[in-house]
Length: 174
Image (tube, rainbow, N blue to C red; front, side, top):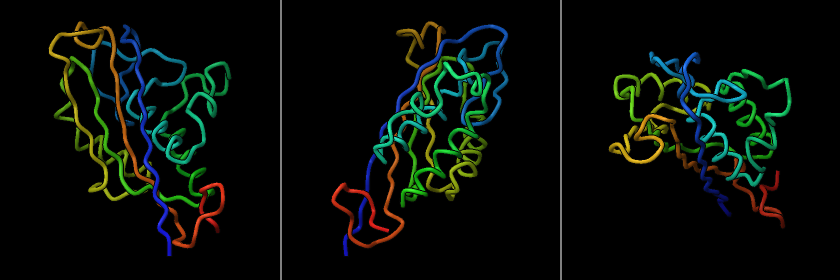
């Protein structure tokens, strides 16, 4: 019996601006600046969403929730990720785990990591022990280091919900 597994990688970046909330991992982080974007600009959830979509070979976040569509103006990125989790489930996949890193000079994220992990766990329907979130600065280097923005990287593993053999296109045969 074949066990189909797929790895996905996601990356996102947003500029820091005045007058916006700082949303990371579905949690509002106290900050004088927030991330700019069409949606709530949650760079971490966007990277995770792209990783999940990539693992299932379903495109990227922009192809599913384009920034040219008014329906997604100020959208809650947790809802977008939840929709993607549902989409991959319909295709016969389950999320196994997530590993993500946020690059942000300030504010410090360490006090918020447990809450972020718990929120991502809830959105993705995963035990919190399968969600890893790390934070780093860039030691003052680049756009992150000078405080112009934030970046996030995510890797995930999907597995076929069914352990039956896969079809010719590599998708689970359900």
